[in-house]
Structures are given as structure tokens and as C-alpha cells.
Image 1 (cartoon, rainbow, N blue to C red):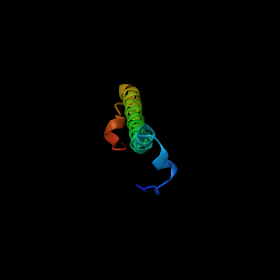
Image 2: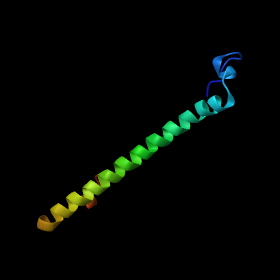
Image 3: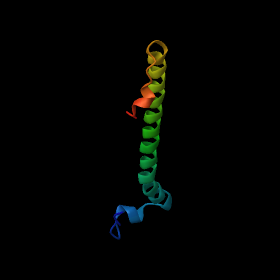
Length: 68
């Protein structure tokens, strides 16, 4: 992480503002991870539904294809 130069706005900010700036990066990373997990879960649920639809008449299972 880049350190600010003495006397910059970061030095003059109150501790709460500095903490908020410091935590912004990890917060954004956590949000991206959560979004990725949600998308993967939705994709898996969709694949399970498609598998069931194809399995009923054709006996084909999407989840065993290894595409995930």
C-alpha cells in the first residue's frame, strides 16, 4: 500500500476517515468474492435444474459432464 506524504490530506483526516479509507480495499475485495460465490451458486443451481429437465426424458445429466 502507498504511504501518504507528511502534511497531505490523509494526515489531516480524522482517525475515523483514515480507518474508513484503509478498510475500503478489503471491503471491495470481500464484495467481489461474495458476488463471485453467488454467481457460481446460481450457475450450479441452473445446471441442476437443466440436468433434471434433461434427465427426466433423456437420462442425461449435465453435472457429470465436467463443464463446471
